[in-house]
Image (tube, rainbow, N blue to C red; front, side, top):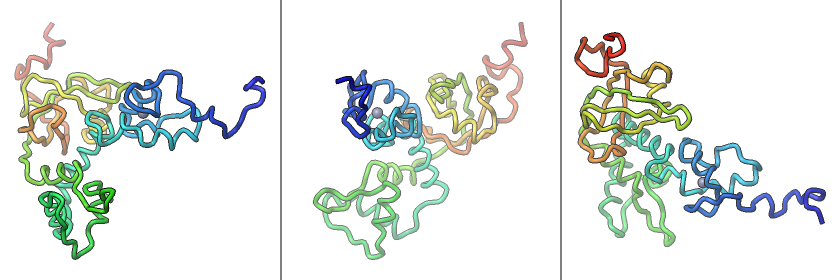
Amino acid sequence: MNDDEFPEPFGPQHVAPPSKDCPNCPCCSARLCERGRQSVMRCSGQPLRDDSLMQLVSGCPCSAETTEGTHAWRLAQIKITRHATERPLRTPAALLLRALESADGEDVDDPEDMLGMLKAYGYAATTADGRPVITPFGRRYLEARTEQRYATPVHVDSVDLEARTAQVVVIGWHVEQRVTVLLDQLVSESGLQPDRLPGAFLEAEANCRVETGDGLVLTKIRVGPDVPDGASPDVGQGEAR
Ligand SMILES: [Zn+2]
């Protein structure tokens, strides 16, 4: 029988693995995961050839916000940092999170019923046997509450429109090493469109004592003051010749 002539609307063909399987997940094609990693909408937010695929790919680990390096992960780090530094948890919720951090499997008191809120933020979860535990995001929140943040110049080296990223040098962290940041964060916070960003000097706050570039989280990004002539080898090169 010719399948094309008698399509089965809810048949297995709609959830059949796409032609080029991703080696790292059971649900997506390699191409879908590549796009999902570079989108805060993850794999399930990409245009899919069939809506019924959305549920299948919604839990894809390759693009998950819990997987380091994905756009969703970068956005989560920004949100958590802003939460911790700009409008932190109320005391009872913060106390419960601290208690979960040090509980190590022991029971924790929750007199004000704050666990639901911590779970909604993704800072706590319940194990299969019903115990509340802190998540990596919860630990990151607590870390962001106490880590020092510094005002630093940020030089934009280049932007990648397709990947929606920018390569920047965060001077207060390292004067040469480039780090990857979300292009849309730079655009929305600085007010500069992508074509004006390469070569721009911005200012931001950053956790400049982290070891890796991926651990850097920029907040409060704004256009920097004018740099004096000759202060940077990258500035004004074009005009001098
Ligand atoms: Zn995927």
